[in-house]
Length: 443
Ligand code: NAD
Figure 1 (spheres, rainbow, N blue to C red):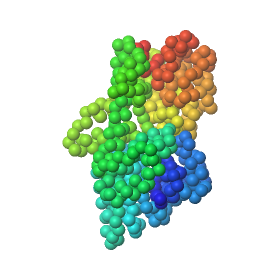
Figure 2: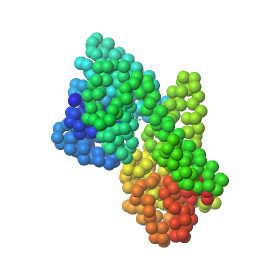
Figure 3: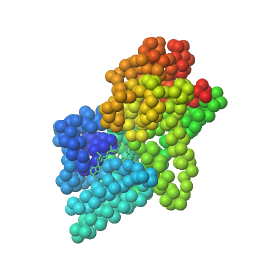
Figure 4: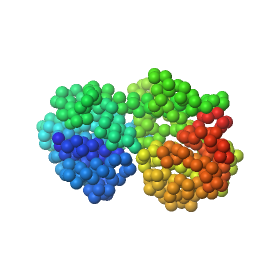
């Protein structure tokens, strides 16, 4: 099929590449000229396992192309996907200006029936707004063209985006138009061969499904962080509690890891946007308010532990930081817990030696050159001569360091394990002090 995708970020580029991989002809359009130029030359702007290979292959084989020209892109597709950003507005609600700009473009150029498919995460009611926006542009140029708008939220996880896109656990299709649903069924048939993965519903339910999914996942994280904060006060180890509750199939082991707080481009903004949606309909979403408040507090947790360990005096100290990305297997640092930590350390007069396998270029882009930040070539170099080591992102490469060697590498003898990766006894046996999250030892 012929597919047009607006936006070549994590969602647009991955979706475009995966649809091309299935034999479709995909044109991706972005307003960022430099990005489009790099993509044409085979340079992938983000780190995502497996993405390079499928983008390059499908581009070389003529099934995946990139452009900045909205008119030609709209002329190409039977389906026009919207996969542009929906960043938080000042009040926390989703900024729809990029989505509606695409809708205006579509209305300005459309000359035949298409299905406009919204993949961006958008507040309930946005499908109607997109439909109205396209219709207004068509009316302005007195064009009579049929089209449908479908809500098809995306559930891929950064770090496993290609895998998720090729093997989705469900495909939500929000539409009340049988014609549009039939087009989407055809597009998604190769992803749907063994199990029925398509869940068809109305647009509003589809839009809310995306927010509900992210809010549920964020709630699980804040819940475990709440339990961790209780555990450390009562002398319990949240890691044992985690295993104890995960064994109950109604709870399960997934996504109940305490840590340094959730980040990324989705959970923080989507929880906030859902709160705003609720309040604009006269409902105060108390649980969501609490999920967000617990997370905000948790992002200060590592700094609090470090500061307390050093008696509040961090001036002149050097802290080694392992992991800067908001989670492993990505270079994305949007809302990453490393950021408030770095900023608090600098504010307190500490210097940082950091290492991340993928997010160093992004760190440099965000913070520039500064005397109190040294980005190191590997984890051991980052630890060299530091007064303490903090683990912020649970990259696999950080999971089993040689603690004895680490003790000799560090100048200080303390590890702050923001992801509870290590056995406290093994760390202490090597002669290092250990602080985790909720492990009964910190307060
Ligand atoms: P992103 O910021 O990585 O990419 C958005 C892209 O859209 C940018 O390249 C930007 O230049 C481009 N763009 C903006 N306006 C445009 C226009 N008028 N025409 C063409 N291109 C335009 O965003 P993302 O992370 O891919 O997220 C996109 C949407 O998908 C968001 O609503 C997000 O909430 C949602 N989502 C993201 C993820 C994720 O893991 N990143 C997962 C599921 C859903």
